[in-house]
Length: 285
Image 1 (cartoon, rainbow, N blue to C red):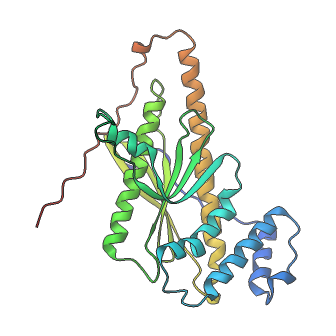
Image 2 (tube, rainbow, N blue to C red; image 1 turned 180 degrees about the vertical axis):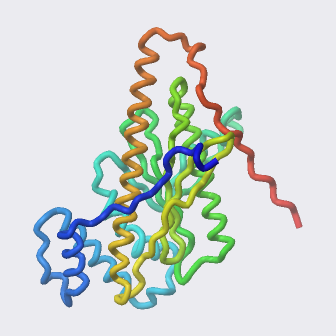
Image 3 (cartoon, rainbow, N blue to C red; image 1 turned 60 degrees about the horizontal axis):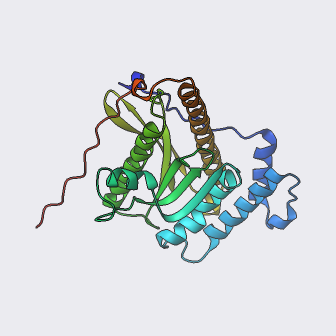
C-alpha cells in the first residue's frame, strides 16, 4: 500500500555554513543587540531568536494556556518561515474551514440549517486560484505542560478530517483532470513538539501520515532546537509550495480542456474519491 501512495517524504532543509554560524553567534551572545544582521534573512532569524529567548525566559513559561503557547512558541516559527511569502494568507485562532462547511451543507437547505466548518488554529490559504484553496492546517493541542492523551488524539483526528475536506474540495474544483496524486499538508503542536502530517488517498482510503517530528526549545539549555524547528517550518513551506505549483498546473490543464470544446458530460472524473463516513453519534449515558 505504501508504494501506491504519492511522494509523502519530508526532508529537512539544510542551513548554509553562514546561516549555521549566525545562529550560533545569536545563541552565544549575552545581548542580541551586539550581533549585527546584514541581510533580510539574518534579520528574520535574529527576530526569531529574540522572540524565542523571550518565551523561554518568561515567568511560568511551563504552565501556560493554549493561546499563550501558540503566541510564544508556535507563531514565531510560522512568521519566520511563511508569513512574508506574498502568495499566502495565514489566519490564526479558530478560523472556519470553508471546505468542511461545503461538505456539511451539501444537499441540504441552508435557509433551514446551515452548518459551519471546523475551527482551525492555523489556516494557510492561497488566493491565487478562483476558489482560494486552503493549502495547510495546523492544530495546537492545548498549552503547557501538556494536554491529555485524549486531546492529543482528537486533535490529530481533527487535523486528518480537515485535510481530507480540503483534498475533496480540490478534487471537485479540478473536476475533469487527474488530481489523485494531490498531497495536503498540516501540522500539530503537542507540548514542545511540532509534528508534520501529510494526507493523500490511495486504494479507496484516505491516509494520514506522520512525516516528521521536531522539538521546540524549552530553555537556554536546548535553545539550539530553534534551528531544528525553524528548518522544519521551512520544509513545511517547501511542501506548501509544491502543492501550490501542482494546483496551478492542474487548473491550467483543466482550462485547456474546457476551452477546446470538450463537452461537459465527457469530462468524467478520472479518480473516485474515497467515501466519507460521518462521525457516529455519541451514545447517551
